[in-house]
Amino acid sequence: MAGVLPASTIMTGRLQALGYVEGKVVWENPVAATGKTIREHEFRCSWMNCARDARFAYRFTRGKGILNDKDGPTELNAPGSYLHTHVYSYPMGRFVGGAGSAGEVRRKGIERLWGILGG
Image 1: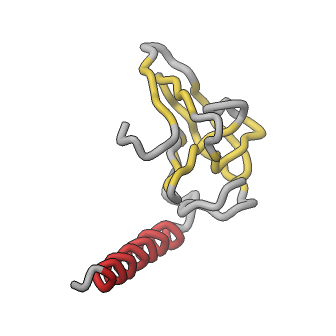
Image 2: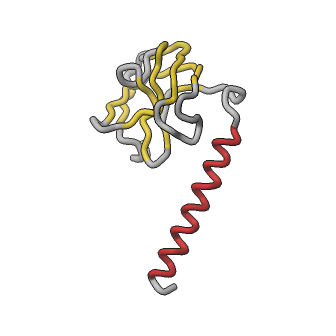
């Protein structure tokens, strides 16, 4: 939708996935650490066409996922997913801390660039 993820979506007009999922985090992301077990809910009426080299944050042992039991295409540390997570499923400190450190990294990068440009 915003062009961040290596994928495009198509609304199908009919249910594509519905139910509970379980799996593991296989790609580090701001929501959960690699190796963590996830239990969530998927619900979607669209189909996602992912790039061949797309990296996925999650691999399911139960549930459909986006592509071959995988979900959460990730780009620039931003996972995209059809999963619905209950707020008590994950400690939000990791997510909030990640957002804060991303802002700090961006601020330092801007300051460095400004210095290079002679600002």
